[in-house]
Amino acid sequence: MMKQQLIFSFLMICQILVAQQQGLVTQYMYNKVTVNPAFAGHSGDKSIAGHLREQWIGIKGAPSLQMISFDMPFMESDNGWGMNIRRSSIGISSKTSISGMYAYKIPVTDGFLSFGLEPGIQNFRMNFGDPDLFAYDGIEADESLNGKTVNKNTFLLGFGAYYSNEKAYFGVSIPSLFTTNFDIDQNTIKSGDELQINLMAGYTFLMDDDKSFMIQGFSRYTARFPLNLDLNATLLLDKKFDIGLGYRIGSGVLANLHKSVTGTFGLKISENVFAAFSYDYALSALRYNQIGSFEVLASYRFPRKTPFNPGLNPRFF
Image (cartoon, rainbow, N blue to C red; front, side):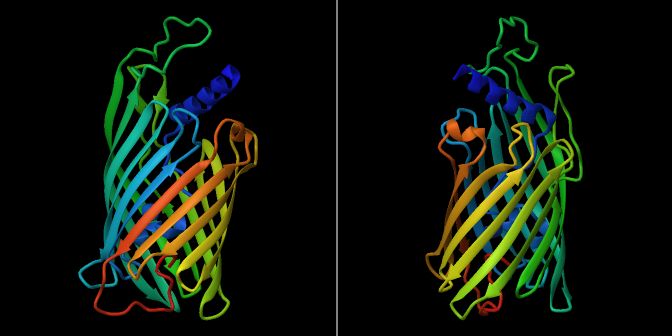
């Protein structure tokens, strides 16, 4: 057990000291405005959503993520604006950010293309006074274990592009165009954000009036961070129920390409309320030390005077 704790501590330290990146999510398809500012106002509705993810349940200090998002059309135009509030934590470190979004939407051929910017501020915090933090192998004077708290604010500027038509979508985004480094008590230890690129795509197969089948993919890339690729297949029934299966692969220090399989269930509770639940079962060596990852989302779309175009699925496109 001690060996497993040592391994996990090493993995968390690698993630903390090399790069603090945008938190991993399974339900990106239900709330794309949190990963791509170009989606703001894209559905034509005013909406608000809450998103919670608890990763690797059973391991102390495992990643945790909470998000609140809001977006709507801008002054009755095709453009959109919105806001994201996000908090993520892993081990002794945490990040809290608030950002605004503006998206410019252009009709193209059989669909729409939009470009978005997301300026914001972020607070980075690392608590070296955490009582669970200690040194191994008799190290008595670890410079990191100084009992202090690192607390620093940085500026964010995200960018995104998004295209969609009645059956397909494709998006690319960068959470922040700036790279940041946080000095820890003037030592050589560094932690910060590096340039991250998100790619997403999806295609819908219409089976009949009440059923459709969608395949989707989402990938995150950073030069010194494990590559993740999510592949998802979702069946929509009676325009009220979503049943999906997902498969995550990626590189990393665990040297295990197969990361997890995911089950997702979504329910349109009413005309304006939607909720979804996901469970990730780990395929890597971490499956022996935790019971999986859970994700919950709830969204509300404010009623509007004109009916929404039924040719587009508002949760995906």
